[in-house]
Every structure is written in C-alpha cells, then in structure tokens.
Image 1 (cartoon, helix red, strand yellow):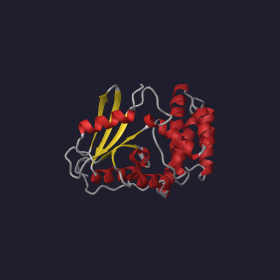
Image 2 (cartoon, helix red, strand yellow):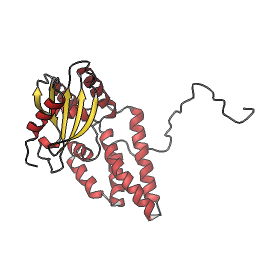
Image 3 (cartoon, helix red, strand yellow):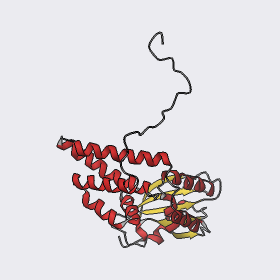
Image 4 (cartoon, helix red, strand yellow):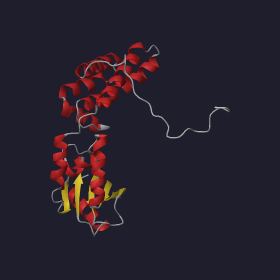
Length: 242
C-alpha cells in the first residue's frame, strides 16, 4: 500500500474521536519492518472520564487494517501497570515508540521509554526455580521420548519455552510471536541465532536447553518443592461420613 499511514491515522482519529486529546501511531508500519500486511496500531487518549474509554477496537479504513487502543489518562495508567507483571510491555512500547498523529502526548513517551530501558523487576526466586524445573522436565521428556510423534510435539513445545525461560531468567522483557524473537535478539544475538537454527531439530533443542540451564544454576529436579494452597472452607462434597 502506497498511502501515507500517518495522514490516514490522523483522519481516522479525527473522524471517530473528534474530542480526543492526543493520539500516536505505533507498530511496524512506522518502521523498516513494514510489510504489505502491516496495520495501523493507534493509541488514542480521550478526555478524562470519556465513556468511550477504555476499549480496543478493530476496523478497516482506506484499505488499512486498524487496531485502536482507546483510553483516558486514568485507564492508560491502569493498563500500563498491567504490562509490568506479565513482563510483556506491549502498551509501553507503543507509547514509547509511537509517532504523534494529533495532539501532544506530553511526557508519556519519555516515561514509557524509561520503563522499557530499566527492564522488568527481577524474577522472584520461586519463579526462577519454577523456570529451571520446567526446563529440566522438558529436557527429560525430550531425551527419553521414544514415540516419534511425541518427540516432535515435545521438541516444538520446548523450542518455544526455552526462549521464554531464557528471557525470564535473564530478567529481560519477553514477548509472543515475532516479539519473542525480537526480545531474544535484544538479549543475546548469538543465542537468538542458535534458537532459530534449532527449530525442528530435537538434538539441537536439547543442547539449547542445557545451555540456558547452565547459565542459571543448572537443572533442577531433586529436592524441588512448591507449597500447595489450602482451601478457605472445607467443602461438603466429599464421600458420605467424611
């Protein structure tokens, strides 16, 4: 598509939200990653208390697929905070890297860029142990699988998981789909290259899991323990007399 995405984004925001305070155009359409299928990811901020905020909406506009992320400042704060425990800074990245299409976002891009640069909070000890245990379990399943179909499924699961756990254990932001690769490249280009090359190769995936585990304390199985939860109330649904 040869249309100007910035101009079309501005027109769309003006048509749908004439009351808006500011809007940003984000995503690959504004970068060298733009493809024929790129959509317009638009963050729109409305006046405080506007009934249209918050919502997410999908549209077609002048041939563009459009994803709208509509907020007022209160909901923007709320949803930015929701990015942090998931360690997937989707909204932070849109606001930090977006191009203004209308209005003045004031200090929001700088604030979000600072959060991205600082990285996520360190992974809690219990979650680090769980990540090591999870990778150890996948490695064991992969090594001992005898059914070719099961080995293929385990290897596919392990290939995605090892990238996710490598990012978590390194206290790095994570992502899904293309952002999983982008975050892994940001962490370690060499590891990202080895990860891509291992796809479909169970033996290479085994080696990659061992590499990640070795970086972060080694395999974890013997002695691993997680406390369970006790119910707040004793249910009355057990066998008679109990």
